[in-house]
Image (cartoon, rainbow, N blue to C red):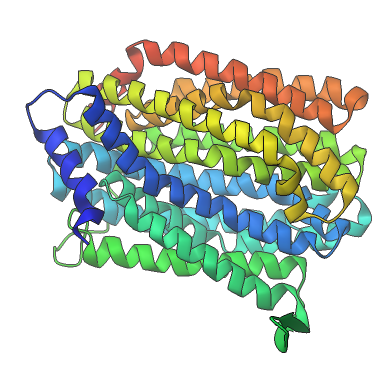
Length: 480
């Protein structure tokens, strides 16, 4: 099992050593950290793919009911992620500086803050769940299922919050492997839970044998319940890891206070608040896109949602590399090594662009198969294929924005990138989509997306070339 911890030992030797680090060593370390992070990200999107494909087999209306509220759930997931990052970046900085005791103090406080925060988010989500499908312009026949799916998902928000927090803490310590393993387990559990919750009791023919499988027949809301249960199991496993087993983070053997301290909360706010605003308004832009798509009909709603999920399989590796970059940059900058910080940022961004370019080519070629897995409806499949092939051209620059953003987050620089993301989403994508959708339908919406992602990548590369993003840590360290 020693190979599972090799990348952590290598990272520690690079961060705390005084020797020069060559390009190939940086690339090898970036790849070794990125692979398990990619697995974790792909696992997360595969869970959505599982829900979509299983519910999609029930017909266009159940599929559209999930598609209608998917972007709204992303708002809540994004806010949970922002809370996690606010604390995990502090932990990465402290570990990079060799202050393990301080990192564990932040971890204790994060557990309390995350619980309180997620309960508030859950209460807000539950309160709007029954009106949300109407606000989004959904057709009357899909509103009840859409409300139930959203209600169950937001009610389980504390489970998602602790999953994000514990995963982020492990990554900040350089442990990318364990979250990836747990993510794979969650996918398996999601399939099992959904299999019994979505479908009724039925007879299944397998290898010539007829087997009778029990089922609850919950349909759409069974998918939400299955995913929430799988996420809950994953959260418990990763919490056990950081509390009892992680060498850098375990708090069970060390006395310490769980009381929230002003300096920690202020740093978490300065890191996480801009990120939360960005996630909220960016997901809000996705909701606006859903509103633009809704008048195009149930087939377009379902095709748009399924295409987003299918495309996620292509860009999630970029987010995995971005997560690894956050760790590399966070610990490097915490150790005061600005040259190494910049080198890791450049190497990782190049790696992300190469990987997502290759995946963009694959997505273009296999787009029909990706859509057919999620829906048997020919109209939905045809619309989705055109959307995916349009967006495939933007994958290289999309990768640049994702990984560069991971570098900025690792440095604690979230405010300016927040405005950059929002300007691109609202100033380019939403406006273009509103103009093109009435003329070109769903294809116009995805043309707008491809143009915006390309523009965003250029903007992020320009900021990455500068130095100001690496100086944010000085302001964070001055907070008391």
